[in-house]
Image 1 (cartoon, rainbow, N blue to C red):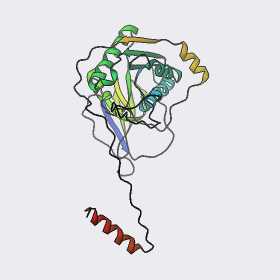
Image 2: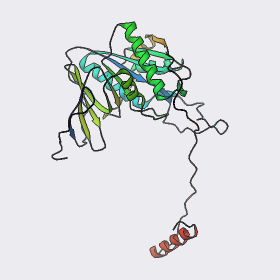
Image 3: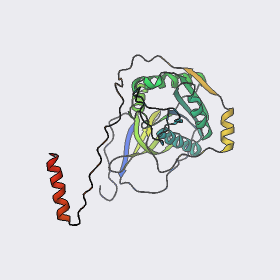
Image 4: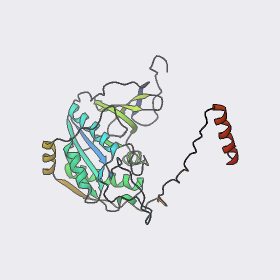
Length: 296
């Protein structure tokens, strides 16, 4: 890149236009420009096992041993929610969170209400963990449309985390955009809005790309330069009083992808420590060991 800034060609995807590209640099994160009108924002979240603790596999079932592991909101979804709430605070509007799952997911939705979401919906599906990304995307689409029909609102933008920490497929957000026939931008780390469009900062391997997108649209969120806020005692108490409305999950058909086996990688043998005062002797011993092991 010349001078830290290079023009890029217009994207072929409908309603999306790259504005400029520039190398990564540190600095304070933006919070969005003022909109002329309020936005209706939907954030899709998933409850996952807490990935801050080590999870082993049950030797009898081969499945992850989750007894005693606290379920939490997926980390990338917390980034998406924080970004959505910041956009709401800057531009005005409302944030609705939506999740698919069983009754236990309501606790995670309450946590979302405690950090800035205005409304929460649960699409009930006890078998959601066995659903593939396409089924999840179709169920999210049906739930979104049910909320719109129920409330009379139309969502301007749908936020998703870029992936979940349990399966890490990274596909749901883009498949959802396809189902909605909406433009999508992945790996978003900041967003501003105004004049019926949004401008997003997309993280790439080379740096960042500023992209304009028409509305409605979908964005999948990577870790931004700021951390999600913590709930206060006051916000937790207020969240407890807010209802979580339940929706019947739509039947989206049979899964096209099936997990055949979950297993841990084989443990590597411990290394051999070579003790030699002379570097040449150490190299000689190492070569001898490698030759004996037929590694060379």
